[in-house]
Length: 146
Image (cartoon, rainbow, N blue to C red; front, side):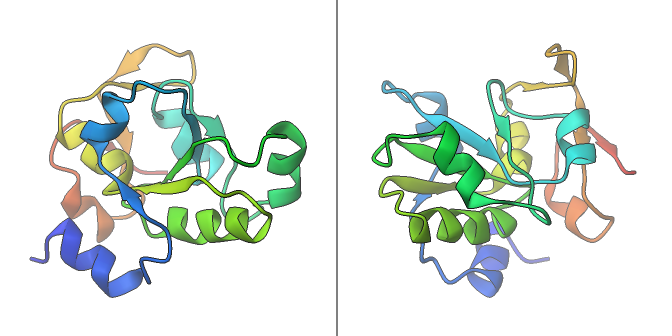
């Protein structure tokens, strides 16, 4: 079995710098957190205060309308960090200058014992596992599929 690091090396170009879950959890400055998964995944579980932006229907101009300061620190995440790199690249093309990809995504967040929240903004053990193949990297929590 590959590690999360191996998977990200395989699928990502590393065009966007990573931020670790520990760095995000300890962030002393304001961070805008964007969830680049589909709405069914977000509704099962997301990181607190994350803004759903989606993947398949992502529109960077919508983000630009809502985040007018293009130097704002933005962290994008998905399940592992593959889709979020694509979304972060789109944000860079839109002129955002301070964009990071969460290394290991929500899976790594949960694996490191950080809390995830359901659609009612209540803590949950459920984590949308995306697919059986990708779920092997989610080591904690209850795996939920559509």
